[in-house]
Image 1 (tube, rainbow, N blue to C red):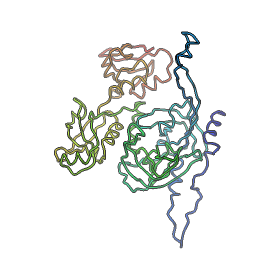
Image 2: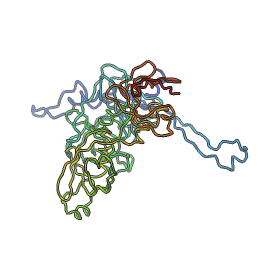
Image 3: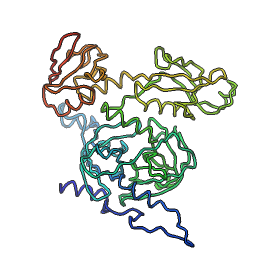
Length: 451
């Protein structure tokens, strides 16, 4: 415990986690001529306990090729690569989203590569966290702690945000302890910034600095509207341009991680580009925003829904989109199997189609491999709470070599019954050595051994 405490203290650069933010619980609202002045203090008293400090430590491993000139002097058995290990420490922020389960959302870049993750609560407690899952492409990670008397933030509908809405950022910049800044929503649907693979950011002028990553962006009701992620800082400091992952997008990813332990990325099956003024003029339409469809993959979710080349998708589930990049980010974070309504313009007319998103085969097989190395190459799906169905098995894959075939249903691990993917991953998580999978195949039962 001494090591953990010193780690957190070092990460905070001497700051104390229990530093009271700008607000004091005993604060008395100021008044002028007998009239009470507006204040964020009452809202923040309820909200700030849900924002935590996230301190991490780990080791960066790098490999460098040994020059042939050096290897010549040490003979043919000399190593071709030199491995260097460099310890690191870091500090970010997180948001408690479920007080009963102890779930905390933060950025993937805050915890990436960490061997140890410590959470500093508003009341001064320091608790080791477990990484439940993460998604590097959207920069979201889900942690879990075991603790009582936690405070969680309620999520707002981030799709309903408008430019000009007030926004408040809460986090732990520069290890100073919890800090609150305020501003407005400056823009919505920001993409093409090169910050993440999947971008659909809320832009705000509320001050966001180093250490704020993973913290909360809230509205004046104290509801979570975004996860603070990045800043534009040419000079290294805040210049009033910060970005947050929308709360709805983060929630979609978190629910997938909770259910599957992985993000099951949705696939529409289209290629396209942003709608430009030239394209709009060429197609004789007035709208200047949307995603222009260049190609529709055969037998994809888009193909089955009736989306065609030349369509311009302008809304997703009734919410307008500005670009193809925004469309891509929304689809990819909704999850495979989601039923999505797309508003589009075709030949100048408005139409609505509904698609059931597919799943990347590569992503599904990678997810199976994360459950157990000998399941890699299989596609896993929950079979109506009666087990985990094997819907595909790649030829020559570890799953095929384990004896799994399409149509098998995993119903148990050793003596533990499993009813869904989450239960399967949990049952395999702490197993050492050989594991017996109980399989239902047609009308028979059998055991397969994973080594």
